[in-house]
Structure formats: structure tokens, C-alpha cells
Amino acid sequence: MAKALRSVCPCLNSVWDVIFASERNSEGQREKDLPSPRNSLLADSQETRHIVYMALYDFRARTSDELSFRAGDEFEILNDDDRSSGTWWFARKRNRSNGECTGYIPYNYVAKKESLATESWYAGKLSRSEAKVILLSTQTTTGSFLIRESENQENGHALSVRDGTIVRHYRVMQDKTEQFCLNTINRFSSLKELVEYYKLNSLRSDLRLTTPCQLKQHRPSIRDLSYLTVDEWERPRKEFTFTKKLGSGHFGEVYAGYWNKTVQVAIKTVHAGAMNRKDFQIETQVMKNLHHPYVMSLYAICTTADPFYIVTELMKNGSLLNYLRSKEALHLGLEQLLDMAVQVAEGMSYLESQNYVHRDLAARNVLVGDNCICKIADFGLARAVKEGVYVSQSTAIPYKWTAPEAIEFGRFSVKSDVWSFGVLLYEIVTHGRTPYPGLDNQEVVSMVSKGYRMPCPDGCPGKLNEIMLQCWNSTAQNRPSFKALVQILVPFNSYEDTA
Image (cartoon, rainbow, N blue to C red; front, side, top):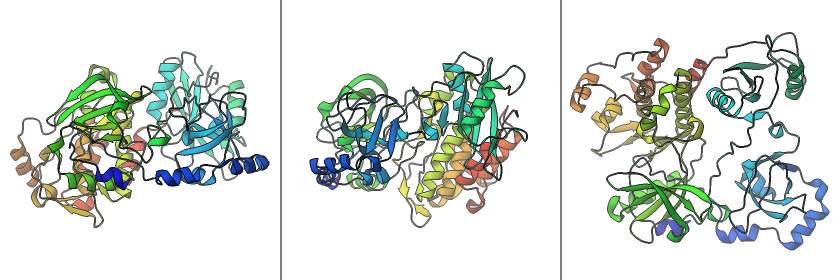
């Protein structure tokens, strides 16, 4: 890793500059940790001591160290250290007649056999809005269903069911004896029992559970290009091919492309003089340890020639700002819009927990993928802050999104990010309208310092406007935390039905 960092040169500060990489052991350590033939034989002799895992999705190996498999294949994990901390596990396939029998597999593609995660109807962490999109886009049968983790109840679950052209959501409750129920009458010892009961009995008039939603096509993202690139994320340029230009900016261009003709990626080209080398190295050192489902991840960099490449996961719908303004987003209702806001709040809550200040949170710096999945991007202005406040001398300030104390004194903190989130909420509910319409930057600074706040947008619920105003409190410490914002926003997606 140190060698890769020493070779890094200046890079771009823009929405596509998402520079995250995993801290891993060195390549030498990785080779040392690979099970030797002797250890493999020992594992064979202790087969019954290994927990059996089952594949939830198909996976095609990208390198010779990885293991291809199909959903339903069973494995034993041969390296306990990998299982406790790594994102790639060294595994042995139990049905050995089906191709290679050992290799590295992505940890989030498997689950313990006979666990809840292996049920065809279990969706895990899926938002109410995502469940609705999936059920309406992939299913045609009334009664198609899934069970997911509850958004507003810790360790709770929710049942989402298609009913004609709508989706109904039911809270799955647990009583003091840990039995599951949708009402106070029928109780079950497991979610599987609950599902089987409502296949035979109605949730409401003429509505029973029928077909589990086909979830396996919605594969989780893999943090790395492959097992071999976990540490070696400085990659040769020849490994990347360009397929389509996505956009351009002051410092470079963005393309869709592939790594080794197998993994879809976004490739940002950056000219060598775009950023101070020392600043880039500092940013990379900090950000490489940040990993969250709603925060963009860096795959690789290429800095051996000009222009440099910054390679990230591909978010097919581009920036949230452009997506909100697109024809495709015109059909989005308040529920879907708020779900995107919650995703951003969850990502920022994670950064908050890591003492990390973004400093440029806005719809233009959030990227959108399939099923309206949102990920926070553009950490070119970001800093890790141990003391809670970062003092900046920069004049590159997005005035309409920046808190008064950051504009006047250069004092950036999580609380100034909360102010920016309030402006982002305005952008979301107005489908991408520019904040403070009709006012220039200087007018905004002057009026906000005197107590002016944007009025409630048309169609925005009063309670949501109250949240914006809380974010825009003139006293930074009186603004809510991102953790609190998540808890406040989730109840907007309240449950509609009871059985």
C-alpha cells in the first residue's frame, strides 16, 4: 500500500473523485495466509468442524485465485481469519464435481446454510421504496412477496406484498416470548411459519402470499475489482477499456468501461497538474478505511502516465441532481424521494461516526444507481476531523449549500454538513430546483446572516419543512445529528396495513 501511495500524483476534485480503498495485509502476507496443502489436508480431516455456507448468487471468478460458483452451491470456509474480518474468504466447494473446488469467494455472496438469509423470500436490508420498485418491476402476480429488515424498528422485520398494481407493507412484530406476528391473534415461532400460514390464510380480502420475489438478480456490490486487487489498487492502464463517455468537467472526463473486460467501472481521466500531490496522499490515507453501502468506493488508480485514471464503481444514473431533473424521475412520489434522502442521511451518519466532514454535500455530489440506490461521492474537499471542527482557508465555497459559520470563519464540522443536508432535502423535494431561486451568492450570504430561510416548497409536507429548518439553525450545536435525522426521516415511510 505504501508503495502505491508513493507513486500517486495529483488528481481531480469533482463528483467522480471518490477515493476509497481497503486497508489490507501486504501481498506477501496474503500469500503466507493461503492454506498450504498440509493445511488443506488437515481441513479435510476436520470437515465436520466447519460451518457450511450456501451461495445466494451466481459468481464468475475474475482471476485464477477466485472460485466460480452458482447459487445453491455449498462451501466450507478454510481460513477463520478471513471469515471474521476479510471481504474475500478462502473456501472449499462441497459439490466438487462442479469445477474447481477451492478458491477465494466474496463474503457477501454466501450465508450460513439454513439461516434466514438463504430463504428465497428474504431480502435483508432493503428499504420500503426499494421493495416497492422490485415487486412492481419484476413481479406480475398478486401475492408476490418478500420479507426485509425494518427501517424503523431495531432487529425488526417487514412484509411487503404485491396487491394488483400497488404494494402493501406489514410490520412483523415480536412479542416478549420472541414469537412473530402481524396482529395480536396469530403468533408463530419463526418467520418461515408466518410465511407458510399466510400462503393458506388471507392477509386481507382475497390477498394471500403466493410467489417469493426473485431477489437473486439483485446482487450486492463487491468492494474490490477482484481478490488480487485488494492491496494492489495501482493498476496497469492496459487492464481498462472505455465504452462510453458519460461527461466532462474542468479537470477531465468520465467514461463507462470495463476492467479486464469483466467488471463494469467508471473511469475518470485526470490531468497530472490538477491537484496538489500531498493533499491527494493525505485524502487517500484517510478515506481508504471508509466503507458503507451508501458511500462510493474506489476500485483502482492508474498514475504511471498522463492522464491519470481514477476507477470507481459505475452508478448508471449519474448524479442525483441530473437524475431528479430527468424525465425518468418525474414519476417519483414523495415516498421514493424521501427514501433517497434517508440513504444519504445513513451514509452521512456513518461518516459522522468516523469523525469525517464532507464539506460539499449537495445533490450534484450524490450518485444514483439501479433501483434509486444513492451513494455519497466527491470527497475532494473532505477532511478527517479529530477535534470536531476543520478550519479551512479555501475560497472554493459552494455558498448556497454552506453553513454561515463555514462561510464567515471557515469552520467546517459535521454540523455544517447537516446544514448542507437541509439544502439537499430542498433539492430532492423540488426535483432538482436550484436553492434560493432568484438570489445570487452575495445576496444569499447577506440574507441568511440576517435570519432568512427558504420558504416551504410547493408540495412539501410541513413536517419535512420543519426538518429543513432544524438543519438551518443558526447555532450549529442546535442542529440535529445525522443519526437523529435518519430516525426522524424513516417514519415518513410509515406502514399502511395490518393483517
